[in-house]
Image 1 (cartoon, rainbow, N blue to C red):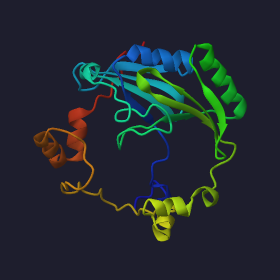
Image 2: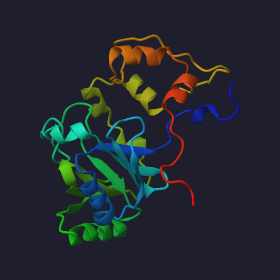
Image 3: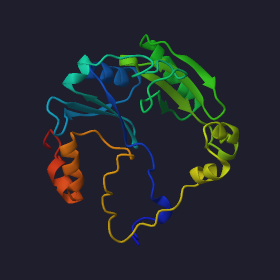
Image 4: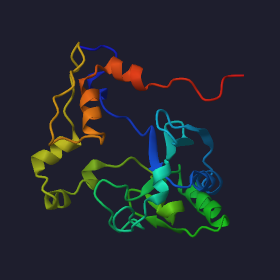
Length: 236
């Protein structure tokens, strides 16, 4: 057993960063910095990706908003109903981001940020009371659908997990209990080996030969091949 972490904490604990594709990095940084008040904390050539630029803005100590600009992105068309939803009630392709909701601490801050956004000429709808949260809605550059939300209390699963809604998408009562209380993971003393390639499982997209080689490498070999640990600007 690994003694560095309690078994019931072997899970993701929050958002480190959300990364969005962009063909206009400057416009996105301008919007998130000036309109939403989120400071830029990093911008640098994307590690190992020719022509790529990566940027990070710090929404909070534990949530970064990131943008990736690659040369080919300028030639990819936005298509509502496929690449983008357009508002929080419209469809987009499976696996795409339907909308992004950032948070503030209370309803007063929600209204203050609404007013900041409107002061920059951006239209905002809300606040709207959803019970579990209050929200405002607006659009960002390149078709982003955005929300700011605040919750007075933690979500009470007993009130907000609707078994009828779950059943409508094929989740029975036993599966619902399992989803609400995931199994513990008892980490073994030795690292779990890389599984054999299974085409039915989710996979990142690489050229097949490259992906096959990466899966054959040890974790240490992968780290040595693709790690870039030094900041772009040397310390003063």
